[in-house]
Image 1 (cartoon, rainbow, N blue to C red):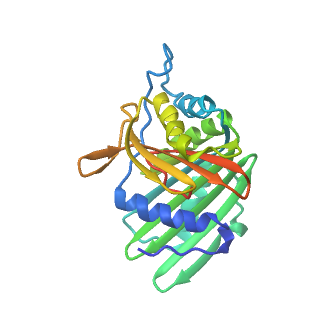
Image 2: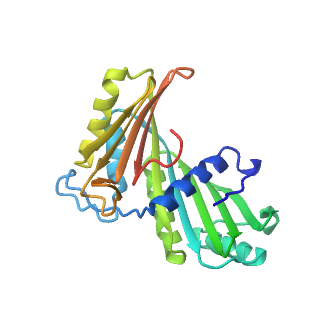
Length: 258
């Protein structure tokens, strides 16, 4: 499958390309459930409290919350139909889309229609791609900030799923000042996983980063590989140029860059 991108999306376009390839192959479906970790608190509809709690537990500042959604339609839409679909998504998300900002590009039998919108502290990227008898719709939404941003992500997810048979993935990014030593990165992830009572499945390490996948019973769906099941992933990455340690937490997996 080919995904056509251009510079109009800045750095988001290559990230989205990798997201689509990984997500469609995996067939991921995200579902969030209540967690027993927060005693006597009914978390139905308040799952984002867990993400905020996970970051606050390690003293990290939550910088950004991101939602990626994708849906495949078994029909090759015309350019006009793709524009109308993006306008429908915009109305569902209550974001104003100026038709003049919607761009179209074609290569061979692939046609791509895209636009982006900034509203308040949110940035929205909408793309439709028609090729070989199907249409792929992509939505990426990023909000800056903490709890309000995570709540906005949940609301966007609900709105998108009302009009599209979409699969979704969410990613939350936080930061700690200075360097977290390599010996303390995995324990840091363990502390975050404890919020979800998650079992650590696999750990990956490099000189500047540690990433771990896990499984928690409080996220209803999962990605399976052999006998292993995953529905949560965290990463700790030290940036020596900025002298900051970035923390990432995603469900069902981290599909963007980290």
